[in-house]
Amino acid sequence: MTDQTTAYSSAPEGGWTIETVADELLRCEDERIERPPFTDEWADLDLDTGYAIQDLNLKKRLDRGEKLIGVKLGLTSRAKQQRMGVDTPFVAWLTDAMILPVGDPVPQDRLIHPRIEPEIVFIMGERLEGPGVTCAQAMSAVESVWGGAEVIDSRYKDFRFKAGDVSADNASSGAFVNGPIGVPPSELDLATEAVLVEVDGQIVDSATGAAVQGHPGEALALAANDLARRGHAIEAGWIVLTGGMTDAVFAPPGSSVAMHFTSLGSVFLNGGTAPESTDPAADSTTGQDD
Ligand code: OOG
Ligand code: MG
Image (cartoon, rainbow, N blue to C red; front, side):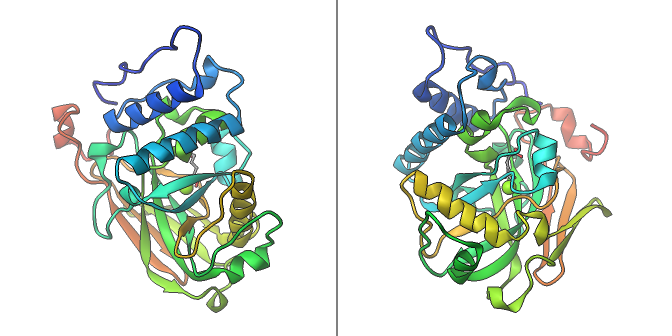
């Protein structure tokens, strides 16, 4: 994809550790390097080890000035689980560096191979602390519901990973943007709220909120309960991305993606232009031919 694709590090002598994987993942993110999954070399890198790596890198993100603004769920729909070959939903961190201002193009200059997926997004009115949180309790802590688009970007080549790899990689976090309308949860039926995914003028996929754990509130409850195991609560004011409702679509330079929600409006994302460090010939392509 870029001229940097071979610049990943091989396993240190003695094998990978939580610290060395964390460093390598953040370096790959900062330098736009894709690499093979660590589980190729470290078979015991499981979900919880991945969480320890994720938490270490959250600390580094905060130390360099980013602010923690919420959480995202990964692999909460069958569509995502089947495509990625991982069937465990899990939680990762959102910082303010991942906010994509409305109207901005896909930030190709800081991403490796972005893909976009539609998500139901919550803004929390109250703190939500597990364990034992139910869907109804979770929904009563929500202030508003939004339609959103997440721009995911795996540090793993071809998005090939196991649960431990992807939890370590902060669930392929990249950027996200919210739609134009936020409503109180009582104003709509989230299970039947639908989305149409449009790429370059064609509708390529669709789903309803029920695709996400039966109801996106179940995903929120799952996040609260999972975070409780890790000593965290979901705080008032946080943003929660409940997980891709459909498989993600590619977002190359020059593409045009829109997510049309039935009640929550449309989110439009322009694929932007190729970063200067990549093949200069890419400037003259539309992204559709490659
Ligand atoms: C993992 C990221 C998962 C979602 O909504 O399921 C995620 C991936 O697909 O690379 O953000
Ligand atoms: Mg997502």
